[in-house]
Length: 357
Image (tube, rainbow, N blue to C red; front, side):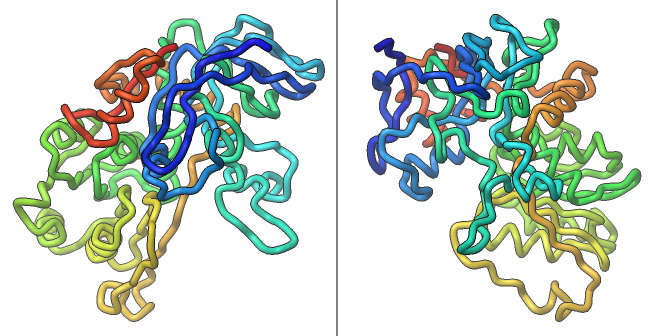
């Protein structure tokens, strides 16, 4: 049995590097040799026991790699080809997929509807923080990487770029809109970049970490509000002359940021929620205008599949956005426990880490 190194969830507070067998390849699968991956905030939730996964599961859902072996029924690809796969790996034939909601693939059951059905890597099957990764439904999910793009240029595509852009897309931003983005972590920064690409002409970013505030300007923010220095709601209303924003994107997942995003909306504005919430949300009566404010509240889960990945890489290749600066630290796979410690404690201005086997 041929073995590989993989970052494995052991128990709450412990993700360790261990040996695991290299997966067998089924007819519709592809085995890719990982060349670069990264750690996501969701992985930290798993580490802390805030999101349950099975013991022994390989963590990670942001793969860049080279096809090592193809399943017998897979066509249109070749071994040795550079590819990425999205964090969301839809089958393409479920009820959710046929309704156009690929992110929720597999979510419907006889016993009711459950979210996150399309997220499998590092959730229900082994993930990408390893030397090798088995990609299911390869013809739906593998996207070839253009030769002129580096691993780090496309590393954000599988998850945070797709998620952040989805916040802007689901918010239905129009040319000339004013947009507020609450929290400038990696996903919030991508939402800021996405808002600019969608045509927003005034983008207000909210955070308090100096490195993230500076990066927000690089991603397209016209104003950066330090919530530790001023009340962000009051400042945004001042910046908009009391009008409010057309779209507010919430990218943290707390009651405070959700409520603030609602409070800065103009009448008929849209709150686009990207945050993952760990408790019940309360909608305050006043900002919600007792339900009569013509507001829209939308949520998003990272879109996946090969067409989504192709489009995101096309944006990168066009040089309309540069997400390489989000990679602030680099580790080899054998130092991944050290990388988790740095990323989990948010030290040294870390945004994203690149992990290379």
